[in-house]
Amino acid sequence: MNAILPAEPARDDVLAARPTLWLNSSYRKNAIETSELPISPADVQSARVNWQRLAPLLAKCFPELESTNGEIRSELIELKELREALGYRAREFGNVFIKADSHLPVAGSIKARGGVYEVFLFAEGLARDNRILADGEDIGKLATEAARAFFSKYTVAVGSTGNLGLSVGIAARALGFKAVVHMSSDAKAWKVERLRKLGVEVIQYEADYTTAVEQARDIADADPTIYFVDDEQSRHLFLGYSAAASELAAQLDERGITIDVDNPLFLYLPCGIGGAPGGVAFGAKAIFGDNVHAFFVEPVQSPCALVHMMSGSRELVSVYDVGLTNKTEADGMAVARMSAFVATVMREMLAGIFTAADNDLFKLLRMAWTTQRQKLEPSATAALLGPQFLVRHPEGQRFQAEQGIEGKMARATHVLWTTGGSFVPEEQFQNFLRQAESLG
Ligand SMILES: Cc1ncc(COP(=O)(O)O)c(C=O)c1O
Image 1: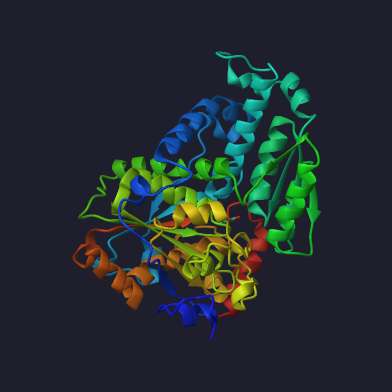
Image 2: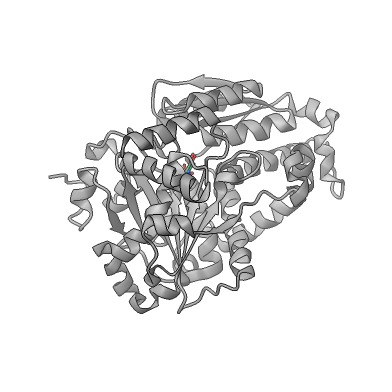
């Protein structure tokens, strides 16, 4: 018997590493307005304004953003063949979409929203503090050789399981910074190689993500020319992700989809340390309030947000504390201990968390490719299981009853956030497909 986790329906499954759905007993209405939080909806609004101000510079640094005038955004894609394959044909599954952050420009994953935002905001602040950029001056000036020469005196550092490192490394190098990425043992070789080709220094650890972040932070603390993107505490990362919610709101609106008390919205968000899914969920709460229900998804061996939030502990609880291994092929989610900042913000705002087994992630990867040609990495596929848990799992049905939405499911909209994949090299992707085939 494990004393850390309370006797809730999901506990036995969590401890046995079986896929399950945990409902957050602290979830409550209007939490974004009434809880004491270190962050507010006004901050989400400011992040949107910041993104807009940075857009002309982004368009100059990344040719692929010229067509969107510097906006980094992804498509909202309706599930058709994939919906059939997933068994979501029945009316009670409502509308089902994927939000294809797998194909986000610049970094090929949801990390483009956080990492690029924080690095560009840092560059702008540094340039203003050093009178490289004056008020009213064109921000595009930061893409000139003179600005690059100035930025080259500084280093941007980050700890990563892979994709955050890619996004921070790419953004930092695009502006002329030196960049150092501290990679956990889970990082895939192709991500390391891609960064090295860009001139990023990659330090690889035999240890897990938490250790990589700690080492990186210690090195940065000792050197004032190093700016450390701190995934365990960063408000900037969180707010960069949060702006995705207004993009989603506009896309739903364009399709004539209403979200209100009779037409709920469900978001399914792959979770590592919690920053990306937390930021998106927070941004969505700021727009849709109690009509959106955000669920995280984690690997069965790395459910760090689940074990910590379920424990109710003030001290962070890690997956090792409850006897799990943190071993998963879903490298983006191979995190043993969640961010304390995200835990605080999400405490009353997160509807629940479900878990996925690695074998299922590979099968889903193959399914998404063969049906709708969606190229995903294993971490990203986890979101596809969300509607099944909400509609079919006993805890999903309890959730519907508690929220009084049983009769509204046919009018609900499910958004499965597919968070990464387009940068996976072809050979590696074919390996993923073969691995899936061997599973039958
Ligand atoms: C593809 C993918 N999905 C989801 C996540 C989870 O993001 P976070 O660690 O901010 O929770 C990551 C993190 O790297 C990722 O790479």
